[in-house]
Length: 121
Image (tube, rainbow, N blue to C red):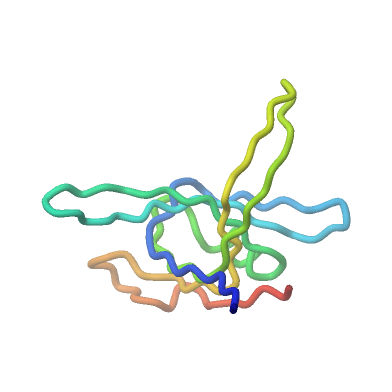
């Protein structure tokens, strides 16, 4: 049996990217995207939390802001933790490996605002 974990999402940032650093000084950028999906006549939106590490994260934090369109390629990561009240929590996040900055519809730029990057694992 072969294991495979890849995801490709295209959407708009739901908040400004937040750049922080680990205790070892490694940069990590967190942001969310909203992805529209059309099902019959109703439009629905899915929301995803994404993290991008190292240079890729720094680039996103520098050039992107809330509302900007972006294409993300990465992997799903499941994590668990214990909340302050002692309850168990879990979440599935996307860890970005590549991103493509997209232009806004009707704007002068199409895909040249930034560049794609690769996270070193």
